[in-house]
Length: 340
Image (tube, rainbow, N blue to C red; front, top):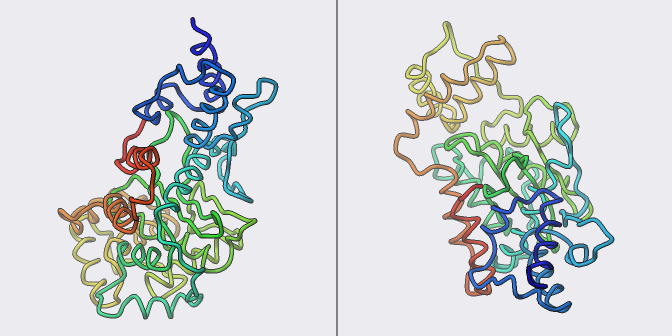
């Protein structure tokens, strides 16, 4: 084994100690990468700088043998989790999100911190102008117009835990990260919830919020406030619980009822279906999620899924000419939605 390969093996091993698999590391290395870069002490530092930027690790903790590698996380991050999940399990996802946000912000037009509609009801009135109801794309476009990039994070190491939502300040600018896998409906409330955190001042330069689970029944004060904001924005009622009249509905019946209710109350029909399932579970202890998911698929039909809507909208908002070739390639590796 050459000196260079020995040095690179040590760097790879150090990345693996914090949770990055060799397969994941290889997936994000630039096309020109050659382990020979580490043939000299200066080369080891250069390789550490590149790896540190890509994987959210402090570079000096990679090249220094007598210290543990340290992840770069959003400033003031506060882990909130359920069911005794180890907070360290979320660190990798937060480090990758932080690294990706730095690249996105290089290409995202800089804007002054926006004046928010802190009253969700007033914001609802504005977003409803000329609309039947408020969709995921409507809330997404509002965020991007204000200067808040919304990033979809999917490409993570095998077995890495993911949060459902993350809101933080990066270089003085608010950022939202979402990870929802379900293709329709679910991401609308997730985004409105994270927007609520930013709008209501829960996110500052010294305080980030990570939601391992976005729980509409959370009793934490900040979580409850973000939930009320999201519900009022989407439905006009901060405590909205949708229940059917009479017997339980099957998927087709729920889809039809949701569309009728949507027209009357200006609420996205997919949110109506999910609200119905959640209410049935909490109030009547009945599992109605399969019915809600069937209804959502019937409502959505062949529409573009929420993840692709997000990716396309973000790319349209970016000036990719501001990125180096390496940063552009790294962004594409994340944006195209590959997963380890």
